[in-house]
Length: 227
Ligand code: GAR
Image (cartoon, rainbow, N blue to C red; front, side, top):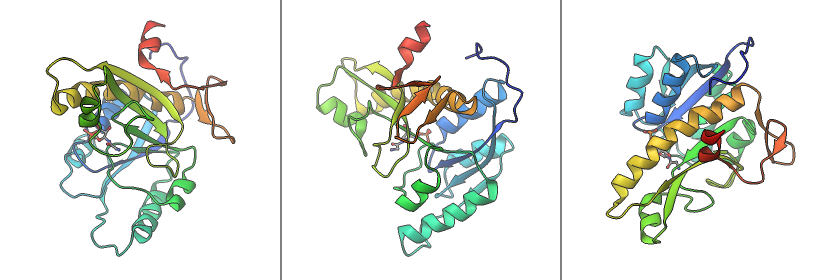
């Protein structure tokens, strides 16, 4: 991570959306505080008031907002309110970090090429929920996590970076999830760093460009770690 040239441009304004523990948010905060991630997390927004990630954000001095989905008659109206809230903070990147809501096409379009999600599987395997149990049930030898740009297709946007973990004898969903989560904490700050330093973007054809080269397959953390 430390090998990139020093960057004099202002840090990238980021909004992070969460619904729960916020351990991926914490990984971003830690990398930012360590001077490894040139971002300014302007706001952390949760759809749940009891999300522990809100405490993590407050502890780091980051502004927090709760926008509960409960008071809204429709997904479209909730997402309009979310878009209005996001606009107040003018983020250059929106980071979904365990935000357990499906977004409307209108909201996704507003942040096209500027919204990331992290998903606990080796996409395109296992979009949706219960990914760890599904990997176990299928008898997979490996499992992992993926950072991708968000599009209308649930967990189906262009993939950027993956980390793999072996499925070990005796694994249950909880143990496997814990090992995957460790890797999530490595790949999310790295992908955000690539974006924040201008190395990563989505082109008009929906292709992922890293250092000017089209990624036909997502980058693999194991290859990067070997560089
Ligand atoms: C993470 O495992 C993330 O990949 C997953 O929720 C967890 C959030 O953990 N996201 C999804 O399943 C989205 N489809 P965290 O709150 O500790 O970061």
